[in-house]
Structure formats: C-alpha cells, structure tokens
Length: 329
Image (tube, rainbow, N blue to C red; front, side):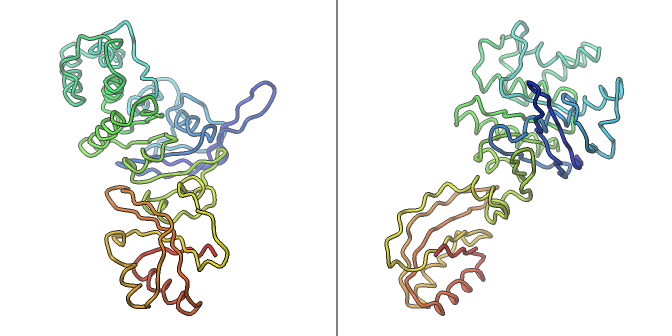
C-alpha cells in the first residue's frame, strides 16, 4: 500500500516560490488501478516523481508497505526503487540499443547472470507481444510498440508498483486502448499496483478503479471512479467531468432536472414508467451514456412541466431507482 500524508513540494523558480503540491493525502491499496487526474500544472507529475524520489518532497510523509520511503538513502533507496517501475509519455528508450538491450538494461545494472537476464527479457517480450522485435532498434517501432517496450523494461525487476506518467498522451485513440488493455491485464495477472497520471478522462474511465482529482496542488476529491463520476461532491470535479452544454432556456419552460443513472438504473425503462404512473410529459433536452469500469453511466437533462407536488413525487421515484436528481430551475 502507498500511504501519502500532507505531502508538499515547493519549487524556487526565477526568484518566486511555486507550491506544486499542497498537503496531498492519498491511500492507494495494493492492486489498485489508481488514477490521478488534473489539468496542466495541477501537480500530477510532481506527485508521481515524489513517490519514487525522483523529486524530493519539501515536507510530509510517504510510506510504501509500511516503509518510510523518504528516510531511505543509498543502497536502501536503490533497493526500494527496484520495486517501483515507471513508464513515461515519451518512452525514454535508448536509441542506440536494440529492444532486447533496452529491456535488459535495468537487469544488467544489477549484474545478474546472462542466462537469467535472457530468460526474463524473453518472458517480457512475450508478455508485451513483441517477441519478433527483439533485435530491432526503437527508431523502427511505432509509438504503441515503443510504449510496450517501456512497459516491459519497467516490469523487468518484478516491481510491486508501476507509475504511469501520461503514458498514453503521445498515442492515437486505437493505440491508447491497446496500451490500456495491456496495463489492465498486467494489473490483473501480476497484481501490480498501477498509479496512473493523466489529464485524459477516457483513460480514467477505461482503466482506473479509483481516482483522485488534483487542482492547484490539492486533492479536491477522491474515491471509487464510478462514485466520483456519478456523484461528484466538489464544484471543481463537476466542472472537470461535465461535458454537456446546456441548451438555451425559453421563458415559461417547466422544471429542468439533471438526472444521473447508475447502479444498473441506466438499463431500466424508468422514465417511461414515471410518465405512465404520473400521466406527465418529460422532454429530453440532452443526454449521454458511457461505460465506466464496465458499468453504464447515463446522464439526461430533462424538462418536466408539472406541479410542485407531482415534481416531488417524481424525484422521490427517481431516487428510489438510484437516479440522482438535481433540479436546475
């Protein structure tokens, strides 16, 4: 488990003080696929680089499996880092070395026997489906293939944690899906904890079971991905995930409601049941449906022209069916 408490990172730039992390606290359980998302400058990359001590936090506590990682130095720190793999946005491959040698590089630093290195590299090439590329150089690979090499290299030392810093930002949508599927399979088969830094909502929806929203170096919300997306608690999160633009509202219109369908309610004919029961018309103004962690999440903006008493009955009926309701006006 990764336990982060009140982590702060301050930089000095051009005579000015910049607080990249401002009291960040997170609990990441073993085996999680934990997403950390925010806009540019939110502090995401600073946080992930503090986890493996590529950056030194200014203050706070950071423990991995009960070990205070911030107190480690020298050989003890190098040993701890072997349990933390990292993949990067721009792959960071050694252009003068073959794919085989790139993956073997962290193993050679440990001076392992050549037979052991060969067996591990071949195992990883098979896992990332690049067995035919062992003797190829990075310049001859596609972006997706380069990232597969980066993943294989990060896994070389059997890490318990894999840090993914914008790992799909340089890839097209089709390749992104392939890489996310690979990361999910690695998590499920090897039990590796994933910490996924991204600014892309689709990455979180597709891959992560938990998420934290960063804003100006602070965690504004965290929790199960489906819960955060279906019922955001903070204004910042609502703004971050809201992709529905409201149509113009004519004068004299009825009540406008934002409806969020989760916990199986997206698959049920709830609105048609309410229309029949209350003998009312419901006008759908806008809507989306998406899949988050294999669960459908639907959002509708609707207009209901009815009395206050009937409106209260409709809202009660919706909430019984796990439809979250927000009255806009």
